[in-house]
Amino acid sequence: MALYKYRAKKGPQGVTEGTVEAYSHDEAVDKISQMGFFPISVEEFRQGQSMAQPVSVAPSRIKARSSDITIFSRQLASLLRSGVPILNSLSIIAEQSESQGMKDVLHSVRNAVKDGGSFSSSLVKYPNVFSHLYVAMVRAGEDSGNLPEVLLRVADHRMRQEEMISRFRMALSYPILMMLVGCATIIFMLTYVMPRLMKIFSNLGQSLPMPTRILISMSDGLREWWFWICLVSAIIILLIRREVKTKTGKLSLSLFALHLPIFGKFILKAEISRFCRTLELLTRSGIPILKAINVTIPVLENEIIKEHLRKSYQELEQGGSLGRSLKDSKLFPPFMTNLIIVGEESGKLDEALGEVATSYERDTDETMRVMASLLEPLMILVMGLIVGFIVIAMLLPIFEINVMAR
Image (cartoon, rainbow, N blue to C red; front, top):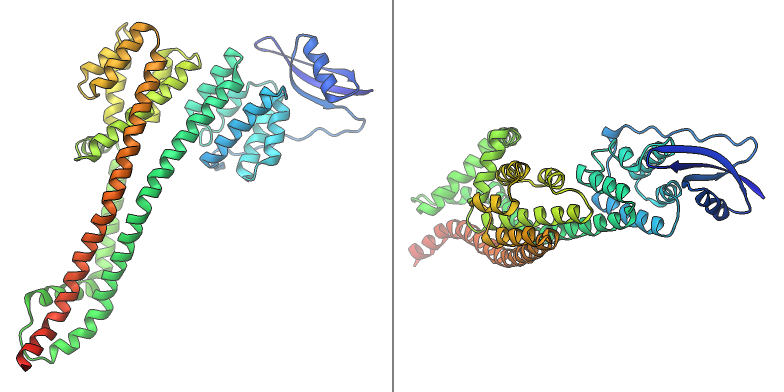
């Protein structure tokens, strides 16, 4: 029989330590649970055993991929549902993780929990890894005693978001590749091919066609002013990036994005689906609606939509209706606002939010596929016209020579 040293929860806030004799680790856990405690850590005690030193990690230096956090959430949920104590679960996942940053974070979180802190408060120390939404969900799971199920919901939610982003990137990858290859081809023709043809044109002793003169001017300008063109472009990009970080710049960019033809409706539907899906996730986990909205708003990116939601939050705080306040804003479509109103009146707001999110996720996915299918031939057409103009402009003088020779 071995001696096991344990650390366990005693009530919502209390933490107790002690030792227990058992033939195995599982038997020790059972004995601690029978004593009315919730095991945090159970380790076999040996003479001369040295205590592990806490892992100190600078939160600002930690980086983790979104997929790593999703995998961690699902693995932790599975281990907790199997009855593995949270400290042991964190240790197991840390050892299996391929990301060194994730290993360091999990070891640090484990040490914080081992010292008596809650799991959610330990995650707060790493805002670059675990978002405010993630921490709020974990805290709700701890308070309700339903942490494994909440973690599974978080993992499913993150997986849906990652799949949508992946589809968006795949839809744009081919058009972007075509644009880069087309631009490289145009620059090569203007800076390498055109100067060699100019030597031939200069010996013709006749006036060149207008398209050829335009092309020669573009070639000369690009070769002589390329440094200043790059410098001015870089300055403009830096100024735009600095401006969009200000509140006024964010509002202007958000307003411009919402009024773009076709893309404006796509952005609005994408933000609505993200808002409704996140709010549904929080309300299903038992988080009060006001707190859930307050956590959900920072998840969005469009500042105009955020401002309308903040006004709805204030009206709801004063006893109003979320659906009616959104309807009065005139920004959100009637389908969304009417369903939310019905959900509020029937007491099934989470189901209404889920239906809205599913509908708009389907719409945005379909719109994305249509835009991707139209963008490819459009890019081919544009690049073909530009390259065609360059080729014709280079060949026109040669055609004129043939005509004169005849």
